[in-house]
Length: 538
Image 1 (cartoon, rainbow, N blue to C red):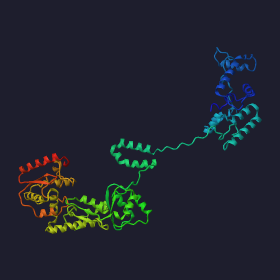
Image 2: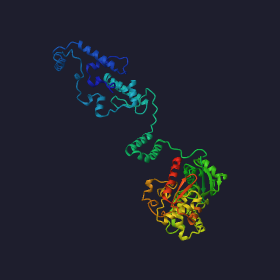
Image 3: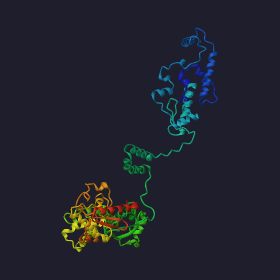
Image 4: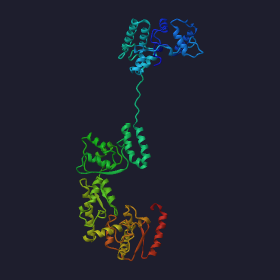
């Protein structure tokens, strides 16, 4: 901005002699603006010239100005020897006497130049300045011609290249360098999501991060433009049996495959089915693999060689929760359906006091029927249990007690030959109102259905209704699903006075039965020694 202003015209807008001398002198390059170095050199030369000019005589027109200047300056410095100062310039008394750029600056009409105008200024392309110089030196005619020339030049450069009537020209102007390519916008999504994660960890700790991290990852994917693959690749890993039920449509099959871990997304598989209208599925069980791509899973389902006769196998002593899991993985049923069917205890014709299906599902092999519901599978298991109870000679009124008793024997006994002895030990204790002290019942009450060992604290917990160390009598409900051997052991107990037993070898199932507590302590030490030798069981 400083280089564009005509400071001489600003300081002295009138027709002073100094301006007339400068404009009258020919210049080699009239349109080229003086650099700052040249301006300073010219100013120094002018000051030297001023010192060499003798002071005007008294009585002349210039005497008052000289006297005034001498009065303003220091007493020791004559006015003729003092360098020229901008303060000596005449003061503008109206808007017309102001320099156009100054007037525009004061009125707010002057705006910051755009990038193109700055480049034009640096290149020395200023037609408006030529118009001002012509106006100051050659009069109105020359000024009009220069302004017209400047306006024409601006018009040739494109839109906006018109003059404003004051000698200033606008317009795009020819660029002195090629325009730069626009920089690509940076994606701020990952950065923002990272800040969110840090803030969550600082404020809420690890718990907040664990809760919010998946959502923040979705935010990163949505804003950053990246996403996790929604399909597996390859032909899969471990084997899994999947059942297609009668009446299943493509969407049901897709959900079953995702629930069984075969495909990663049911939506991806279903979209693939929509592009393959000729595909049809036959109800039944198919041997597939986990983590298969959608294309590989579809090809495997179309291959008749993968169809198998699947079944639900329930070993003796299996807990209800494991049976439910088998129904989901083998029969192709949903967890919600199986859980709801298991809670509807009174729908299966059980005794009025029964509160759970635990103990009433007879251990056996049940073939998969693709058209069955969860209730139909459970009903088949309950009916089979009732048949075996009747075959063992159990009256209907005694079925519930026998099932609870047999479930206890099933979990505590090892060898089949010991089942009747174990049943006798528990019955002898019941007869003398002695606590059964079964670790299997305590473990079941804590939610552990796969181990029978317990801790001192668990055995002392009176809040556990299955804690037979604290509560006398049989547990309130079965703790497993007993088989024929356990049922017959309860209905046909061995003869003996045993009150104690302990399995001293968990690998072989060897069990020691004792009549007295002292004998029992010897057997317990034998079992503890075996446990120390086999830490994998602890």
